[in-house]
Amino acid sequence: MYKPRFDFGKEFDPSGEQTGTVKDLLEELNYEKFKTAAGTHAERGNSNGTSVTFDSLSGVFEFLNDVTGMSQPKLAQDIPLSTLKTVKLLYVTNDTNDTQLFRLLKSPLRGGKPSLEFYTTETPSRNQKGIAIVDHLLSTLSIEVDPAVLRRINISFLTYPKLLECIAQENLEILEPIYERHHGQSASIAKAIAHLAEAVKHYKPMPHRSDRPLPEALYTYLRILPFLNFVGEYQEVIELSRVGNQVDPILDKIDNFCSELSIAMQSEVHHNTPITSVEGFPAFVDSNSLALAKLVQHATGIASERRDILKIVNASSKVLCSYVHHEWGIISLDTKNITVVDCIATLCTIRHQQKVKTNYSAYWLGQEQSDKGTSVLRQMDDARSSEELFEHDYIPHGINQLLFSRFNQFHMAITGKTGRYSAWMELQLARLTKYAECYQSNDVSICDDAVQRFYKYCTREAIKAADIA
Image (cartoon, rainbow, N blue to C red; front, side, top):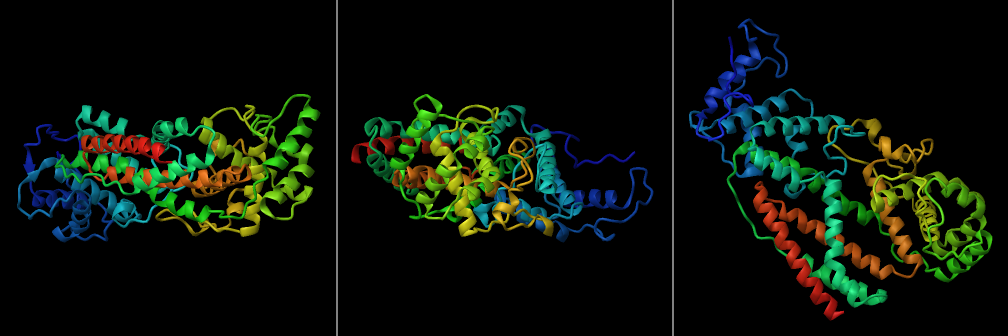
């Protein structure tokens, strides 16, 4: 009975003392490739029936050298059994899939093309093949990672949406001295945040190398990879989303509109009073479309009539969905949390996109031609509802990020806080970039330490910035 030696879960050696050679691995790969476990010849398929040679593994060794610094072993050199299992896992995964595995797994910090569609999930809407491959690698590698270390890795490297929530919470804690010192002074807050952003850009995480067992090192790397992809393309999307000085502050006009609403609703309404929900937004627009069209025109300079506003209600609702999701997570869309400024900002966002016609195409390795749309509004799929977004995630992440960024820019600009938002976005980008640099090790303890050092640095610099502004 044939028993493979280089499969995960077979001859598990927590001590790391068991060894083998690449020659042994090649014998096993060729046996499995050309014979069944019973010893009879199997169909020759995946690599056109050619034998696996030392050169066949060169792509695996190059990848591992890039990720961990591991040098290519000699044919008869004794190396840890866990290393050979990892080499086999990568070779077989690459050989049996039509995706270019090592391009898929190349870090954006090392020249890989970043993608907002690179993540790990059980129900992906896009990039399903690539995500399934990464999930397979993670589940296999985890078999031979020390359970205590595995728990720490999974806690430290959350899915990137959860990690972004943690970073957002850190940002609030870091900025607290600035907000307290300059409460109600938007210009001073903007100046202090801009000063902090510059300090963050100059921060240099301490470089560390660590020799961890290869399955653990690669598992850590793969857990970090979705976040690195997010940071890489997020920066590109934010640059694409910039509105510039194309927006006029209209807070006085908004206040006049709120006064009229107060009379109609028989309750006091201010620009930041929650007056509707995502679900109730279309009815609110329908009842106030003429006034809203005038406000959008004043803000953007784009001629807008009642019919123009009514045509973009569905797309605008989806931008509000992104806003609600960022602020409150997954909640009922009938929650009354949308203000007058929110309504105007989302309508401005879509009218602006209709004018500038920014193109965006989601990217992932191996995508079909039919997946490569460029029109932002067309990819929002006007035939589908806002309610479906939380369930089916049918809008590419880059489009959500692009329009949400513009929504925030309009939100701050029409209330006269453009400088504050620009400073905050510079800080956001700087913090994310440095966070990614803190994650260049494949040792979770080193990454955790780097993040803690960075947090303390930002906290100290925020106090300095509050005093300087």
